[in-house]
Length: 67
Length: 211
Image (tube, each protein chain N blue to C red):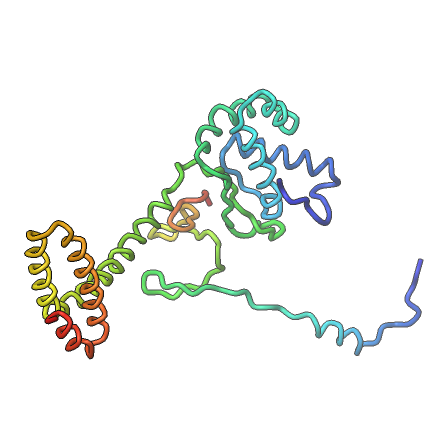
């Protein structure tokens, strides 16, 4: 089995980890009921009643699935 | 023909993927709408639509080819007798995939894949309706452009009309005259049109009509 010959230095470990970058998701901005809402594009949204209880998932005005 | 998939199979191998997709297709035809991961749904779509195409063909050979994929005769019967007539008018695109969100356990993107069983939407008709209003203004423009020269014309048409009256008078005298008169009228009409285009020629046309 191949085994590393030397201990990996702190600098090279940190240099590798510095390349891990999180990318922000692309969001769409919509205005629903006077509020600005950011959401993922092309994704069904949860429809809630006035008490905040989730009812069903909706996409393009069509009920898609139950929550 | 579905495009062959590149990369690793779903499940443990090619046979596992075939079984997995066959079971997913059977579940889709049973329940009309199933929730699964995005990867599986995208692999399932061509398989299921191909089976529906067989179902639309509807003969015994097609039924046996579907049975080679889906073993359950009850599901195949339902596919051929209930689903196929509903999509008879539809030219492909029998399934709809809607993204739902991410699964709690492994954050896998989940989708809802469903059969599109609604009657075919009359999209071409909507296009025709949009075209008609567009076409009408164009015709109006043409008519207006035709009317504009016609309004300019009358002053110049008067001598031509006089010539026509003279030609009719000549026609009374001789039988050969009408042909000549027609020729003269055509020539003068052409001259009048030319006059429409070039206002400078008005005096010349008037002089010709006087002759």
